Amino acid sequence: MDQSLSSDLLPVADEALTDAAPEPRSFLDRLFDRGLLIRTGVDGLYGRSGAFESVVEALDRLVSRIGGADGAEALRFPPGMARSSFERSGYLKGFPHLAGTVHSFCGNEADHARLLACLDAGEDWTAKQAATDIVLTPAACYPLYPVAAARGRLPEDGLLFDLQSYCFRHEPSLEPTRMQLFRMREYVRMGTPEQVLAFRELWLQRGTTMMSDLGLPLAIDPANDPFFGRAGKMLANNQRAQALKFELNVPVNSEDKPTACLSFNYHQDHFGTTWGIHQADGSVAHTACVGFGLERITLALLRHHGLDLDAWPADVRAQLFG
Ligand code: ATP
Ligand code: ZN
Ligand code: MG
Image 1 (cartoon, helix red, strand yellow):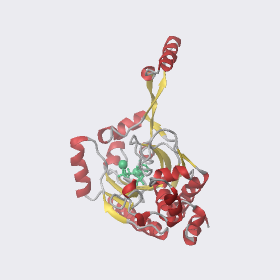
Image 2: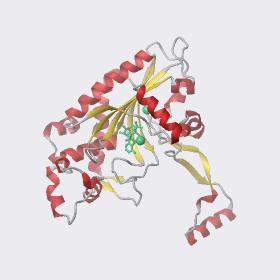
Image 3: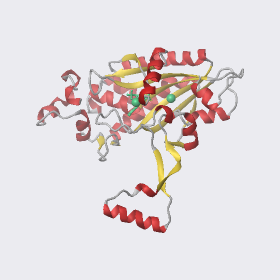
Image 4: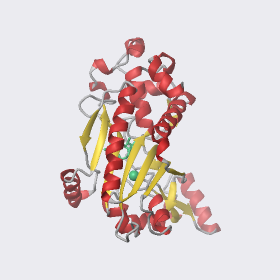
């Protein structure tokens, strides 16, 4: 994995660090060494340093500047959504393996005593936990659709939203770019097929310009979501055949398997049908979203410009912090 990285990806600024180590340190270990990410004991669950956060926040502002003139309505949801909405969204059909539900203790005093006894004995204390009405948000746009549907028909021009949320996906990994809790900034467009495809095209261009202006090597590639199981393979093939999803990939962990830092998704009428979102003329709305993985872009910058933010190229710093 990380050890297989070709050396040209190693930032010059960190060569001394690499040389001094008895054996090559992985990218993740070097992020820990510098305190940019903080271990919690769980793969994919990390603390972030102030420096790391300053980049995340700068990227969030940069995205706002690029999309600012479009008049998107900003909405912020906490990183949990209503379980009823989650169930209706269809997420469990495609991605049961990634979902995270919030459970709480719902027992009586005797159950409490049993819970503490289990804990003391090092046994499973979670049996008396029951599902709450909250599920962890899997993608920033998921809480939006029922809210938009409740407003009634879209205006002629459709709607445009600006979202950002911590998202949860149960995909523990030693690649720092694959976290279990991470932030996704999104713009979501709802309207006619022409309106939402024009939106996606615009962001494919804007995203490419943004990332190359930040000095990152990139490629736009067709992609698919990681649908579960054998039926999922067909859904994934279909998604690719219809060019519904593109990713902006940057080599971060390896040259061979670059990392999706932005994604551009055309949902056709999937969410419109699921939620009953209708265009002005009454037909089912189409939707599309562009997602920015804020930690992933931060990690791409750290990989390519070095772990010392002060030593980043002046023009990159100017765009982020200027
Ligand atoms: P991948 O193919 O790498 O799993 P994805 O297709 O699951 O990515 P999306 O579902 O399109 O990604 O999510 C939108 C954006 O959120 C991605 O472009 C990426 O930047 C970010 N993202 C997705 N999964 C993670 C993760 N586990 N950790 C950090 N960022 C993520
Ligand atoms: Zn989305
Ligand atoms: Mg994924």
